[in-house]
Image (tube, rainbow, N blue to C red):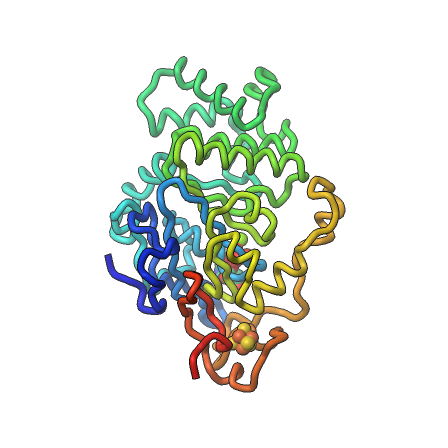
Length: 345
Ligand SMILES: Nc1ncnc2c1ncn2[C@@H]1O[C@H](COP(=O)(O)OP(=O)(O)O)[C@@H](O)[C@H]1O
Ligand code: SF4
Ligand SMILES: [Mg+2]
């Protein structure tokens, strides 16, 4: 398998590039065509996920997380195009698959949880739609399918059995709908789940239960997750590694405990500092107040900057930061960081 050209390889044996990756994303570049020009939403993004691993994708709104995730699933909108890069799932080149092959893979092997349960069909009873997903991907009769759906509903905390089974999505609360979306994503026991801000609109207690479900699925089925969030605390509680993105680029990548104990990039540091929450984690109001906020705005994605894309907001900015583009470099602790402070003169 080719090796990313933008990453100086970590020392051999580093856990950042697992030997047997379930998913490998290499130098992925995605562009959107707009009336006003072409926007690069993902710029040579690389990471991998091993079987049974939970990898977090962290960054502010607009940094390219959803674009990266949708590229893997072949679900980019019409005006988007993968300009370059390689995507491997179990060694298969995803970019070479026909739409029918991709459709087979989605749901059976790779499934997705959206942040607003928008994957649910509003005019179909929830039990029926989850049963349909299962029967589309697994060989079982209707009775077996219904029993399996009931057991996964219980696993995601949907205990109010019969009422929920016969309900339409709009008859349920946001938390219940999201649990159904999670059940739908997990029902066919996929190897990889892409969860795009799965807890964004949930109260803290429901969010904690969804994350507990993620941990359980990993423990019992060795399910891998790409867990996307703008909230570092979500990732801290569940991910093994995290990939931090800023303005379409990976700017830091490391094991979660490593990144939290010693964040290297000034952006990661600022994000973690402003998400530090002295209040109890199950207090929804105070958690909301503490969502990360860093003064200033991300650069205009239509403008290509000569230097570091974080320069305008960086507390550690140096004169050369405006004219030199930092590369993603391996660090002695096995992490990767894109910042000129770490580049040798
Ligand atoms: N369908 C689209 N058409 C044009 N630009 C888009 C589209 N979707 C996203 N973008 C732009 O791509 C960039 C990355 O967006 P996105 O991947 O949604 O980020 P995130 O998920 O991190 O919030 C943003 O500048 C966003 O405005
Ligand atoms: S390269 Fe310069 S501006 Fe960019 S993050 Fe590092 S110190 Fe800050
Ligand atoms: Mg998004």
